Image (cartoon, rainbow, N blue to C red; front, side, top):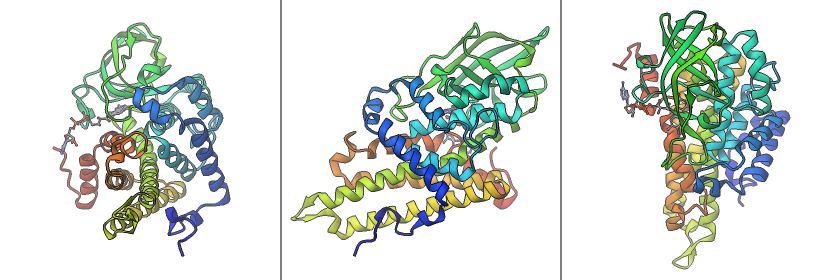
Length: 390
Ligand code: FAD
């Protein structure tokens, strides 16, 4: 007899507390009702319809900055946040990216390093989803090596003047506030930039074949003038942006397994329905080998995310532990989606099914928040004590 839930042969559900299950179910129900019916169309059009309305609803559900304390944030656990990421990304990586960038990058930066005034001005609105945030680190000539950034901030009397360009910035064109990292006389500093500041513009990046249901933009900073109070006072150097990235990477370790679960589910269902040579393709050994491999990798990746979540709640995570999850799970998820695509044959390339959308999205997930190669080198450094970045 088949087990009750073929998507969870190991009964990983039993690792969750009733409260955690309730969080998971609430996010799943919201995604199924509000986003799932439209997501293929949004992906095809390259635009999330009514992104402001959607962000507000995500805020009402308590999903924005949900693992932060105070200032209107929900103060949930790392496992709760991870489960939310998984469910959001089971719908689409673009939806999870919206929530990750808002909560783990923009809000986290202000929460961890901001002044009291910056926190009070921005965090309640960002948590409620009445404001959208973005996080500008990457530049046209500075990606994996953020220390090479060219954007500068210099003093002009009491003010700051920012000049430069940021590239590939999620939520950029729709953001009300940008956390921008720039080079100063004192090293890299973070700035809280209202996007209506004269000289700021954020043209959308077009022609993406991945994360199409997500806004990605360039940020142009053309001698923008900010008051002295715009700098994040509590951090100097690359430690600032890198600690924000660690938060977001943690969520990706969970999220990627959501995209993988959706694709696995589609392949399992499809293989039972599709008949060739007079039999369902699920009865062929080669198909079963694919399904088995997908199930193994899905369960292993989910277990890894769980372990990281429980560890984070218990005593915090070291960067190489986060790298473990981000590297393994983004890579495993992409492999699962590609295998699922083969099971669907020609239908595998159609947006009628979620699989090619997830696979294409995961190409971005593999690259952003530290590429596969960067995380490989970070784990390599932790294993050997030797840095091989340059
Ligand atoms: P590069 O750094 O130029 O790397 C190119 C290749 O060279 C990669 O394979 C890389 O691993 C490899 N490589 C580089 N150095 C080494 C080395 N020392 N050893 C071995 N291999 C190496 N950034 C933000 O700041 N904010 C955002 O919100 C944001 N959102 C994004 C959304 C999307 C959809 C995408 C695609 C990107 C986003 N990014 C964002 C940017 C992302 O973080 C960068 O693309 C990423 O850090 C890689 O930088 P790069 O593209 O410049 O590639």
